[in-house]
Length: 276
Image 1: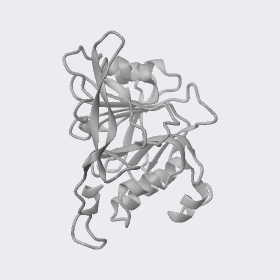
Image 2: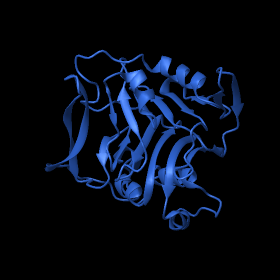
Image 3: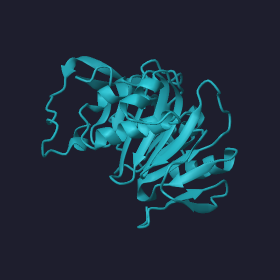
Image 4: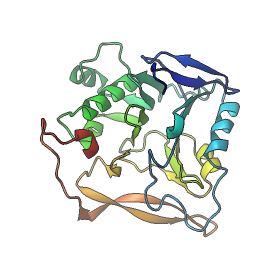
């Protein structure tokens, strides 16, 4: 992000143009690649002793060239976000939005959208992606609720990927029923890759890919967590494919392992955003 608040947007052949930092939303197909310094893949996601995929740099170029109407938004050293209108499901619409340098890709449908608009003081025209961005900003700016509750308050079928360029941090989640296809993986260089298309993740990450765990969310500061069971740790479950090769782990709630709690009170000098 440069000094005047512009962000770079690349079209099919990586033709670039700039847009003013404001509000921008349309239907999309999702792809995100994050540098390990922004989103470190959890233990077990990188499959041991197997050949990785083609890598994230190749993946972004492939996405831009293969997806009709594809756009790739460069996040500088943080990574990239890509989206397209191709293969749109009218029941699970895909949206892209930017508000105050917070970028968000969203797919799905929020059932309690009216109550969330009221909760976050949004107008009637606000859609799902704007609601997620506003929920994040409220959380980031010392909101009164933990991240697990913010995500749990969203009722519906959804998956979203959010990047905050002001803090170089990420926030992404999937609903508890897995109502939207959502996959992630780690490329050979440790970049975290997320998409609603399993084949795209496989291309970049090889065997080091898996469905994103249902009812979970991920943040730069705290990694992978369950919003259904926020007091429990998650444990990696080894996974073997039909050829007997070890693949990326899946993650399940550990009923025996409880987290240490210590949320700062509202108004304290502690940085609230570091605790979600």
